[in-house]
Image 1 (cartoon, rainbow, N blue to C red):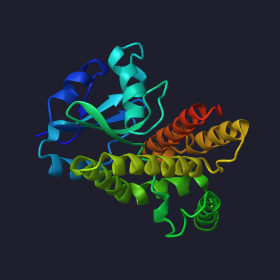
Image 2: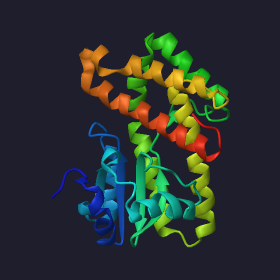
Image 3: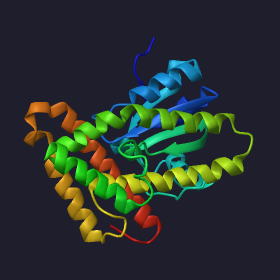
Length: 251
C-alpha cells in the first residue's frame, strides 16, 4: 500500500484523473515540497484508495500541451478563478476527470491569532511581533510557523474538498472557492511580510529578502526544514504574481 502520493508525469495527468471518480494532484516546484501529511491522511481515509493522490512537478510541465492549456485556462475559470499562464502551486481536486476545486495550501495564519484575518495590516503586524519578541529571527519564526500550521492547514483543505465533492449546489461552491482563493492571496502576502498595497518593486524586494533569510545554505543547522520553507516562499511569490497579472498589476 502506498504511503505517499504517486509521482505523476505531466503526460500522465489526463489518464490519472480519469481512473477514479475523484482524485487530488499536488502541483509542486521541484522535489522539495511535501504533500501536507494531514491532508494526505484525511484523503486516503475519505477516498478509500491511496492511488487517487498524486504529485506533479510544475517545472516539467509542457505548456503547449492542449490538456494543460485547458486546465489552466478554461477549467480554472470554470471553478470561478482566473486563467493562468502556468500551473499554480497547490492542490487540485478533480471529479470525474474535470477540475472541481483548487487550493493553494498557503500557511494558515489564522492559527496565530483568532482575529488575525480581519485585516491584512493585523496579519502582518501579528507575525512581525511574534517573530521579533519570541524568536528574534524571521527565518526561525517562519520555520516554527510552518510546523505549527501544517495540521490545521491540511484539515481546512480537506474539509473544503469534501464539501465540494458532496455539494448539491455549484453556486455555493463557486462563491466559496473565490473566497478561499482571496484569503490565500492575503496569506501569501503575509508570508512575504508585506501588505497587498505594496508596489511591484516592494513585492520583489520582499521575496528576495525572505529567500535569503530562509535559504538552506545559510541555515545549515536545519537544512531540510529551510529547504521546504524556501519552496513555500517561492510558491507564495508565484501566487501573488499570477493574481497581479490577472488583475493587470504585474510583478
